[in-house]
Amino acid sequence: MMTYLLLMSTVLVGALLGRWLRKSSKLSIKFLLIFSGAYLLGIGVFHLLPEVYEEHSHHYGLMIMAGFFTQLLLEGMSKGLEHGHSHSELFQNKGLPMGVMLGLFLHALIESIPIGSHMNDLSRDALFWGLIVHKLPVSIILYNMLCEFSGKWYIVGLWLLSFALMAPLGVIIGDFFPLFAEHSAEMTAFVFGIFLHISTTILFEGNQSHRFNFLKYGVILLALGIAWLSVSH
Image 1 (cartoon, rainbow, N blue to C red):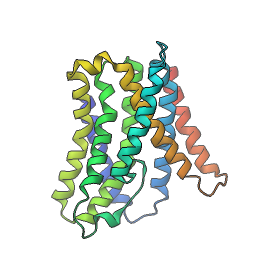
Image 2: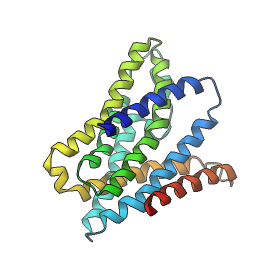
Image 3: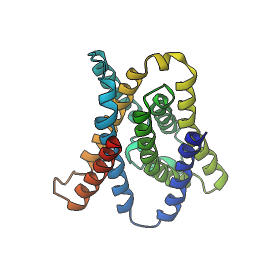
Image 4: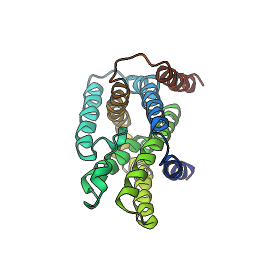
């Protein structure tokens, strides 16, 4: 139950932060995205990948690539909202872009399935906290975009609640269907592929000027350090 509550409450925290940051500089959201991207990459490499390859099999590599390119397809629907692309113009006077919302909801659902599919405890915790860190900036951006679509709090709240329910639903699906328990390593590899796409996209897009930014690299090293320390303990 605590897993479900924490996954859902992250969206609420993101919405509150989005309300607070709405009229401020976007710089803080940018660095939060960079932190989340580096953290996802860290837990993927330090936690998920070693678990997947405990039993050596080349088909796990195929699942990683399948996750990577599945995220590429989902990104085509969501317009990159899950890694920080804000498209407020899509929400202004044109109705709610259902393709964007569907892509985002599917992404949130799929990436949480391994949490319920009997991973080992260390990797499960790593993935759980990775999702928490990842969902926070996404929720901020989604909140701001929904406010562009509607000034009515109950409409914004309804969509945020629907988004918040996707991760718990994914956990329930992973736990309820034996197929996911039997192929836990494959699902973990698949989600690692999704994380690999998101994290590298965030980090590469954050360096379009090709200049060395001490603050950015400090944020990246901090995120990787936290991810690494969570392996050691």
